[in-house]
Image 1 (spheres, rainbow, N blue to C red):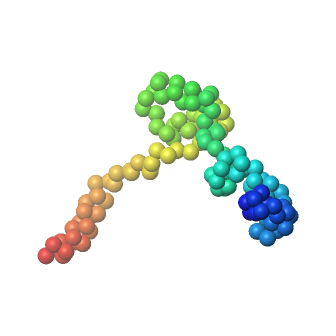
Image 2: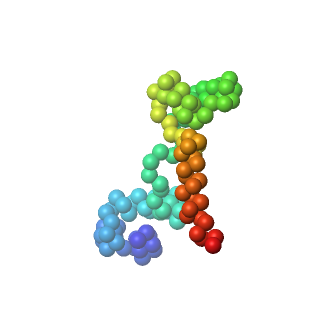
Image 3: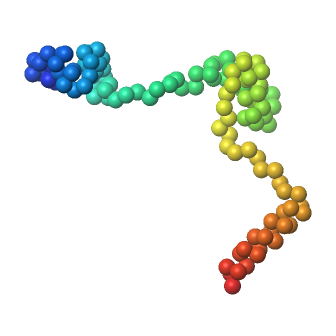
Length: 122
C-alpha cells in the first residue's frame, strides 16, 4: 500500500480504500514503516509492557522482607505487598504444596494401586 502511494504516485484515499484501510491507517502505517522498517508494521502485544505493579519501592520492600526472613514464600510475600501497598500481585511459584494423606488413607490408596498394577505384571 505504501509503495503504491510513494513509488507509483497513486492517491492515498484510493489506495487505502483498495486495501480496506482508512487514510489515517495509511498514514500510521507509512510512519511506522519509515520509523521502524517492516517490524513497525507488525502489531504490538496489547497490555502493559513489563511488571508494572512491581515498582522499585515494592521490589525494595520484598528484598528487605526476604533478607529478614529467607523462608518467606510467594504467598506470604504477595500478602505483604497487598497489605503495605494495596497491590495484588500473582504468584508464579508453582502449584500449592500437597497435603500428605493420613496413614489409613495412604494404605488404602496403595492397596487400590496394587490391585490395578499387579494384573498388568502377570
